[in-house]
Image 1 (cartoon, rainbow, N blue to C red):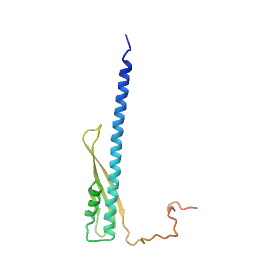
Image 2: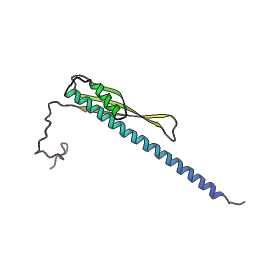
Image 3: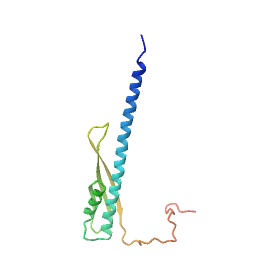
Image 4: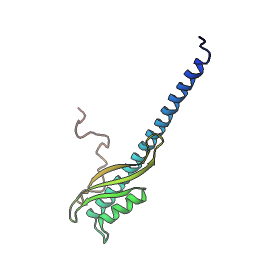
Length: 139
């Protein structure tokens, strides 16, 4: 019995495993990139809504949050922003699209919260250390 050709079969298996790992890595990278974009969109939406609550204009905070989420490529799915309140919580959804190894459409969801304090002094005290940690102050 000859073992000729067994290296070819082994090489084919190794190439197949390498291809599956490469496709899986591409899928993971695509999902992580989409999650990062979704988080950016959620942060922008929450900050826009919080600014509207803290310094009101004639705009609707939820509409602003939706606009900023869409500008960043996501869709606003939740905006917990009550007029007169100072806290905003948003959730956005972003379509990832089809992946290479997993069939079907996929999406990622990200959330953010912003708290506005209209009484805060916008000019920081230059004598304060900007690196100081309020939880673990320097000894």
